[in-house]
Length: 170
Image (cartoon, rainbow, N blue to C red):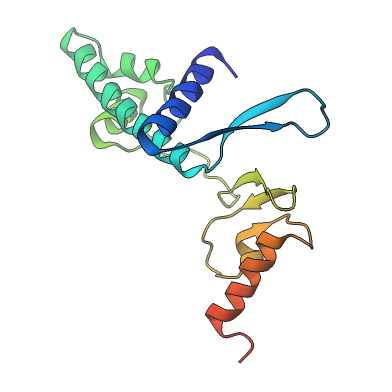
């Protein structure tokens, strides 16, 4: 992790424990006899901590942008500081910076993605890398996640619950 990212990670971990009742556990790293890693026993306090940091960072961003304007910085300069490229989107950098700071929206990329949004994570029960498509148009667990082992207890439980919820067997 980079320095700033590592610091934020430690801060989020501390907030998760101190403010949201999280508990830190040490677990061995598979394939290594001596190495361990820290993680939250339950990741939800980490989600709450990260959301708190996101909200605080958003407030700081707006505050610093206002101060930058107050001392004479242009929206184009603010856009450059945000890492926006000039003319890469439908809006110019200055307009995109204003939209992001004042309106709270990120300028759309010129080339829309052809892939469905997804994320990935390692399933704790089966150990496999799972691609998570979120709550797609279908409620079937196989349409929302792929990659679980056939014997995965978590995925089998989701399939069983889906069969109950949809009354598939009736």
